[in-house]
Image (tube, rainbow, N blue to C red; front, side):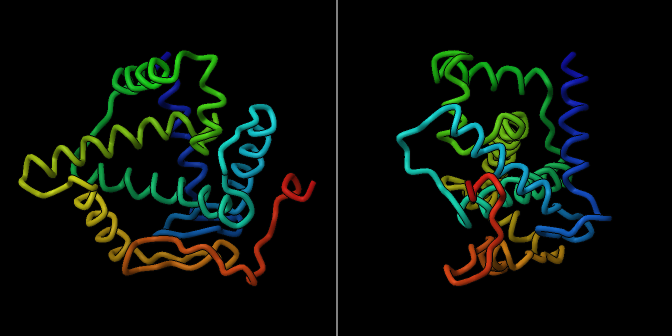
Length: 201
């Protein structure tokens, strides 16, 4: 069963990052994140918020669009860095991390509102877990080599190195690419940023 779940997650990421067809929200080298992937994530985020109201000041509009794009963008970059560094995560480790999160928040029933507050959709949750584990292992690898990573600076340096070696293009509706800091900067308030149908209701 775990192998099947891992296969589904891998397939979902592969479908998200495709170099052909639909207009892109962003491209990294030859890989592309489709507009549909990002906007579907925004729509699902809003749907899950409606089902699990939160008192937190959650992102909306352009800021939410950019956050959803960043999730897929940096997940892809992290996966590539992990491959380069030969860092792997097993299904058992993912299951353990998931249970650890459930223990921290008070069980499965508390997961939907917790994800809403974290601005992570239920669809993104498996990749979120994987990203957490990969970041931890890459950080530990940096520490073992005597590279400071107290505030994640070693990982940030690797992200910067990867994005400099692979051309990054951001669709203007999501903002611009800050190459010096390997960051996607949200569009200015007067920029034309499309809104999903769910946001206009």
